[in-house]
Amino acid sequence: DIVMTQSPDSLSVSLGERATINCKSSQSVLYSYNNKDYLAWFQHKPGQPPKLLIYWASTRESGVPDRFSGVGSGTDFTLTISSLQAEDAAVYYCQQYRSAPRTFGQGTKVEIK
Amino acid sequence: QVHLVQSGVEVKKPGASVKVSCKASGYTFSDYFIHWVRQAPGQGLEWMGRIDSKSGGTIYTQNFQGRVSMTRDTSITTAYMELTSLTSDDTAVYFCSRGESPGGANDYWGQGTLVTVSS
Image 1: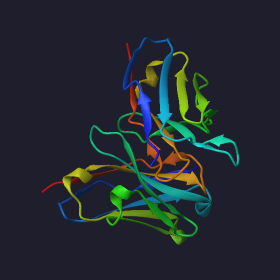
Image 2 (image 1 turned 90 degrees about the horizontal axis):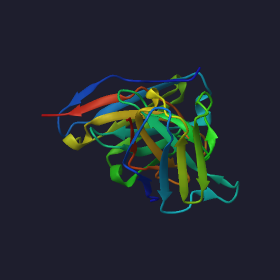
Image 3 (image 1 turned 180 degrees about the vertical axis):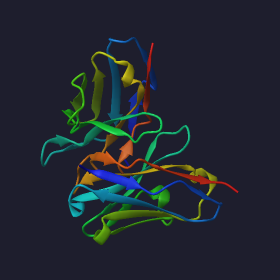
């Protein structure tokens, strides 16, 4: 199984400041056949289902604000929230969907300072 | 618009089974897999497995092998997840989610079904 490790476990950021979350996979999630990284980022708030933010490591899902961005390839990935808003307080997960079982990182809790 | 609507809260005794449904609408059911993910209290997200809505083929994660069964009824565009031999460790919110066949990200999710296992 591919192990996903996120850092940090939690983050406290002031409104308007940048939040950065890292995700590392134990094996590459790049599929050479189509040159795509099978890496997604989700936002999860209590009492709600997870929300897809980013797929193919850097493609923003429709309707997701452009303050959310994803970069990286192979085994190292980053989610950045460029200017934190109050509604961004949540737990963020990376997930690889390159191979089964699809595995999630342990989650990063983002709080407003 | 795409909707995945799950069945309601379940309370089960240890050793029992639970079957959660996920009714899909707003898209071509057979073009997507249905994945099942759970979140135990205070824990992260755990992928349980998926079913190919077209063929019925399944993949389950090792943790649930032998205890989980994922099925679908294409006539009513509904997927099901049955978990047997429940213990208190299975107390969790269970989510269904679709992913484009064969390797798409999980873009739409059901609202979640709370399953509580308690004597």
